[in-house]
Each structure stands twice: as C-alpha cells, then as structure tokens.
Length: 117
Image (cartoon, rainbow, N blue to C red):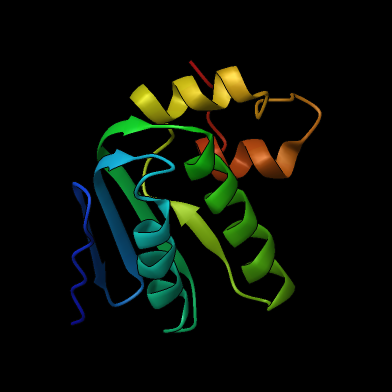
C-alpha cells in the first residue's frame, strides 16, 4: 500500500489503484494533486478516484481529471470516479461548462451513467 500526503491542506492517498482526495483542490494545491494522481496511474490497470472529502475545488481539478481521463484512455487503461460528482466538484463542473449533454463519455466519467443533479 502506498500512501501519499500532499501539502497545502490537500490530503491525498493512493491505495493500490484507488486515489482519494480531500480538502482544498485549487490552483494553489493542484501540483500536489497531480503528483498523487500520477502515482495512482503508474500502478497500471483501472484507477478509481474518490472525491468525497473535497471541501473546495476550482477549475484546475476538473482540468486535471479530464486530462487524466484522456491520458489513460490513450494508454488503454481506465479511470472512473468512485461516486458521481457532487458538492464543490459538481459546482465547478456546472460553472466551467463541463456538462455538455452531447458528450456522453464525459458525462459517463463524472456521473457513472446517472443523471447529474
């Protein structure tokens, strides 16, 4: 089991191929979140991201996870959220224009086939 703690109020863990973020995930801490996500992706196989304890987020989190989604797809891997996006993350997606109903792959990633609230 690998555990990674990030600075700047972000607590991040990588447990096998599960990555858990918590705290504030903003431009001030996104470099640490990036390092944690890359560590989880390096294990190979599917990556599951848990955002349950994210208290604050900005557009950089959505951009990071979108880039990761495309990167793993290009490598033949997969990444998914443990639960559909909600709370601070959902607000960022709504404000940032990430919820285009014509982009089925993106909606599947963020909501796991469920209809966004």
